[in-house]
Image (cartoon, rainbow, N blue to C red; front, side, top):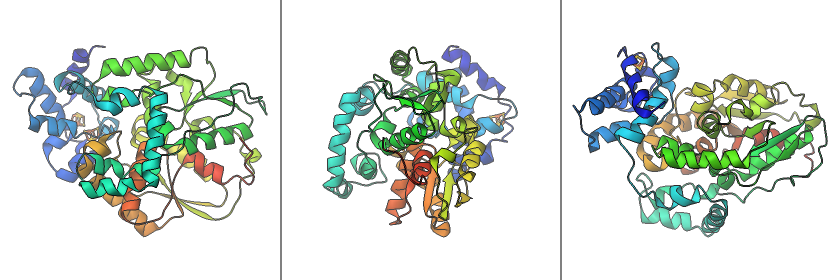
Length: 401
Ligand code: SF4
Ligand code: SF4
């Protein structure tokens, strides 16, 4: 469907306002322009020519975190996520150019690894603090980016492609992506260990690139399509499940990325799998769990996440209050809209301070980065883990990878 055909769906909005209490940005500003209904009205104004693409219109439209909470509750079935993507691609197109990060690093694994090595060194040398001293962390720029430096991880090491299967569960391919490969290597390695122990043959096909979600949601549809094509090539001939640990990337791979139901998440993959081979420990652990918007509002699998966590012995499980509202991470939103991102995060950090858990667990790397940066800012020491890391940490004797 073309973008202009998609945008006809703005007519489905009956302006009832039922979505307003579910919109995180409207909850913060109480400005109609920051609500789903207001944004749809702005789209209609741009399409009719009654409005022009000026800074105020852009501010309201660009401020959408893309959580799709409005879509989940809309009685008229307004496909808000698609409307926003089409709006960014046509009505408020992104500036030309693109910058080093989105233009090159997202697409090239070698360059990305070199850059993440540099960022790790910068983090160890304390250059993040220096960058922080040179600017304001509540404005887009290097000082803000520096707040996320401590999470840069070493590239993951996977089992060789021809590693023998230790059980009869068949094969699983890991989707590493770009952000996950740079920031979440330990989660990918943990997933490979868990799955190997459960009897899966695990591999990570070479040649895979960024899922394309960041480009797609920013209106750079051609760049996103190029990345989708490269991933299709990397995973050509793979008929077994493709595991994507991050709900945000998974949503994109599933639909625009062309993977369909072939791509799955850890809580879905393990839903019917006996965890006994993991020899899980039952030492008491208080775990607060965060459910990313993509898992809750788009995939509808937040219940599966909770079910999987409840299968871990010794774990006391507490939902993060306000879980139905976006944490503000939202792809690159935490870097481009730091003030709103931090306002959305604040109630979650307050709740965490009250609950004082042993661990905070989430199912999306971007949310994890944003939560971890906020926790550091408050000088708290609650570790943030992915589902795979948490399960791996509960294995009595994880097998060597
Ligand atoms: S988007 Fe849906 S819920 Fe929101 S005002 Fe329009 S019709 Fe009502
Ligand atoms: S996607 Fe989220 S932030 Fe955007 S209008 Fe809908 S509820 Fe609000």
